[in-house]
Image (cartoon, rainbow, N blue to C red; front, side, top):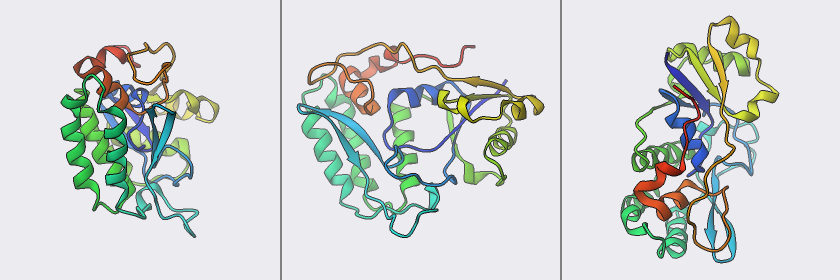
Length: 233
């Protein structure tokens, strides 16, 4: 049975996000949802000798309180060069930096002229999936008909994609209307992000809540061994 997950896009997200992607047959970016400030949509963390630090894409928010993620514009194209310099400075001594850096560097160079946040996130997700050897189809919610109601929209998107199983993030337990999935004949399952293995990191004690690029730079082709299936066969 086809499994689907539907989640807002994030900028270079942590490894659990990619486990969610690789656990389903189609991953739909829910980018016609409202953009939320100070969230993961346009920023993420990396490790430095001084601790974790944010890499944030500047976006236009003044007077745009109800804008959707897919409508959110980038405010300063110099962000890409700045982010790459920070990444290179902090990870150039990582064990697998050289095997990962070139493809990431090229994308940062190419992406600087992209005006829309959603497209930046999509391009990074696709590259990072390639590096992690994840072949899941990635779609956009805007590729499908629009539906009213949050859970109803999730159900209808899942149906439109041909999904018979829906894999949700664990935080959705607090608000998701499970009966709507049951009525539609869709199995509802929740991801479990507990019990992740630690992996070798630079700069002191292990920090789990950082971008997946940290995992790639430190473990290279072994990255998948530090990930886990969220949806059993």
